[in-house]
Image 1 (spheres, rainbow, N blue to C red):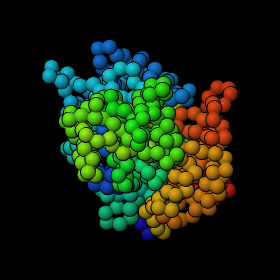
Image 2: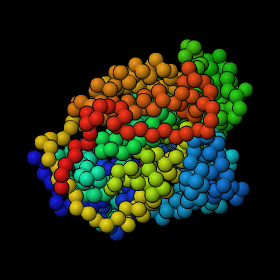
Image 3: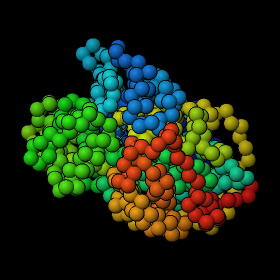
Image 4: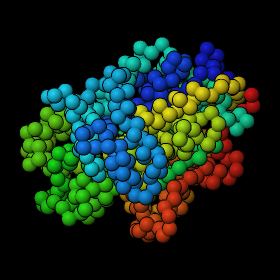
Length: 511
Ligand SMILES: Cc1cc2nc3c(=O)[nH]c(=O)nc-3n(C[C@H](O)[C@H](O)[C@H](O)COP(=O)(O)OP(=O)(O)OC[C@H]3O[C@@H](n4cnc5c(N)ncnc54)[C@H](O)[C@@H]3O)c2cc1C
């Protein structure tokens, strides 16, 4: 029997300690909360890797309506416009919140926040830190704030493995902790487990980003939305590392161009050129590489010897591979980078299961539609953490349920799934490949092995991608190359649509 943490019973449990999880915990204060962090605070989170920055309309020539319009344009018809306006309007206050929590952003000589430009933003509105170390600085500040906060109990490392459901509502969380398995009875759980890029062979995400929170939520009965929309970043540093270091869009924002091995600038005739939406740039790069061509990001003319000062982290990653971006083009390739879909949530961050909230990359708020606008995800993580904290604080405590299973499922391992997901669910999809993926994934998704959760997440992507008979944003079908006729629609899927009834049900327990 797994030990029950009665000392923590009833407290809201936040699964994940990236920006979304830490910001939720801090914004719940003074109510006591528990954070389950799979790796020691500050590591294992995509938040800490983010480079370019966080978008907010704070420039003199900018306003939230312009930011929302850019977000809507990038999302290719699927952005929830009310959410885009709400998030864009909340962005300046989110920057203030981060400053209050101790984040130090880059400033100009007059002590104003420096604002960078990124693809598909019509204004300079990217707040950044240490040049390209924005996420590291934000996470540093939030980790320090959490360590100081008496209301936050962090269990690290703690790997959440299952949610318990009773009477159709969340009743507890079972996890593997530093001293073994444990169970916390609670009626309030937040999934803040980030993205799923590590299901792919080429990714910029931490290798733990296998979408496990989505699997936990789906097994508990929650709807997942827009699962087919995976964003591939066009310029991951192609030097054989896993995960791949990122060469931020901000480098193109500063004027760097994409060239092939002959030196031809192949984006010149595409609308928006190197700063076209990510899906457009990623597919152009991918097409060249599928023809056996080399692709490079050339910052020699735009930045030259200023490169290392403006982008110290990227310069260091290049140097480690023997490349000096001041004098040589940087080898790049597309890599799975961000997931627009996730746990379907309402305007308060609530999922379709009572007592289960989600925020950050694990949630699907509709902000990103079919394609995320750069630097909107850190923003979404902070803003939606506030919505979740507010919504959870208003919930009366209820009796939680017991854990009755003998043991926990094993730790998630995505090794088995990476090949099929990369080959069939990548930048270009078709019916045959998607059907092959579904046939391969379905039997494993409902087993008890270490690959079951990553496989289930892959299965959701494949099923949603098969249903969407069109190309839109990050989802591109060679057999349906255009938008479908009629109004665009978001997609939603439940576990029971993928499997025979009961085969993958959450571990349902009585009180
Ligand atoms: C290289 C890179 C650069 C980026 N640059 C930018 C940028 O400049 N601007 C921008 O807006 N966005 C950027 N993004 C995207 C952005 O970083 C993420 O979308 C955002 O940080 C997600 O925050 P999060 O808190 O939701 O998830 P994360 O920061 O990934 O945190 C997830 C947390 O959940 C934990 N976890 C996962 N599963 C479990 C489990 N079962 N039990 C317990 N804990 C678990 C993880 O260990 C981690 O602590 C970038 C992403 C990458 C990879």
